[in-house]
Length: 436
Ligand code: NAD
Figure 1 (cartoon, rainbow, N blue to C red):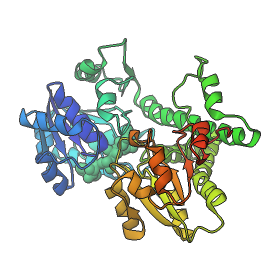
Figure 2: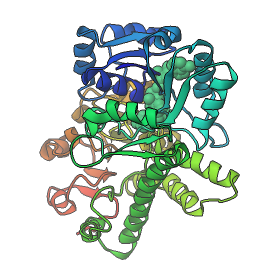
Figure 3: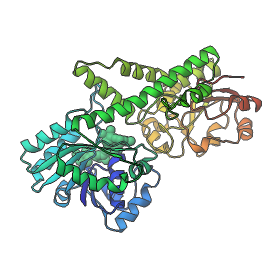
Figure 4: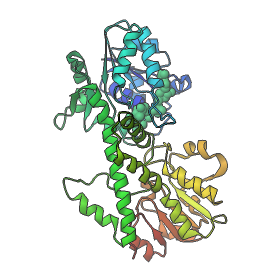
């Protein structure tokens, strides 16, 4: 099928590459011509496992192309996906200016029957708005459907190729038929994974899914705080509740608070939308408040255990990305920790396997960037683990013990066992762990 994807970020680039991988002829469009030029040379602007070889192989085969010209996409495609950013506005609502700009520009160009699918995360009613904009500006024979994306950064290819579900919001049967054919290679295994519904329900499904996941995180973070206060171990509690099939094991890990480009902004957008519709979601407001507080928990532990006064202290930070396997630092808990440490006058030495360049755009030379985890920890008074990279899971503790000035580890991801760390001579503090 001839497809176009507008916006070549985490979602658009992955979707474009995966659609090409299954034999479609895909044109990816991005307004950033420099990015387009780099993509044509197979230079991938983001870290996403498996993406570079997939882009290369499909470009080589001629199934995947990049352009900054929207008219080429319209000439080429029968289905056009809108996958541009929907960043947060000052008041928390989603900024739809990019989505609507694309719709206006498409309207001037579309002359053949075309399906326009909104893949960006957009508030309820946006597919209808895009439809209205298209018609208002003269597009004919266009069908708009909502097709929210559920991939996770760091596992985006895997998620797109083997999705838990694909949601398509349209009540137009011929559009359903096209989307069914397009998604068949991805949804064939494991029962019916393609779910059709009306556009509004599809749009709400995306926000509700992220809201549910964020709720689990904030819930576990509060349980962890409670465990610390009463001398229980959240690790055991997690095992205990996760064994209940009604609860399940996934997404029950306490940590330094959720971050990234989706959860924080999507929670705020849903809060804004529910307020606007007169049905405020108090539960979600609490989820966000808990998360904001949680982002300060590691900093407070550093102050409590490495203090008093951090101005003379060297703090090693392992991990800058908001989670492992991505270079994305948007709303990363590491940013909040480091910002607080700098305000306290600490010297920060950080290492992240893939997010150092992204972090450098935030902190410049206000922190030091170490080439490896041990260089970061060398001479440090405290080591703070913020991101759960595999690289940090089984460090050489003997070496760490020798090179650190003080053997103090604050572990924001509960990667290590308190008993073992104590036996190795470290003072160790996890999140909600019971200490020997
Ligand atoms: P991103 O910022 O990485 O990429 C957006 C891209 O769109 C950029 O390359 C930008 O240059 C391009 N763009 C902006 N305006 C444009 C225009 N008018 N024409 C052409 N290109 C334009 O964003 P992302 O992380 O890929 O997210 C895109 C959407 O998908 C958002 O709504 C996001 O909430 C949603 N989403 C993201 C994820 C994720 O994990 N990142 C997962 C699911 C859904």
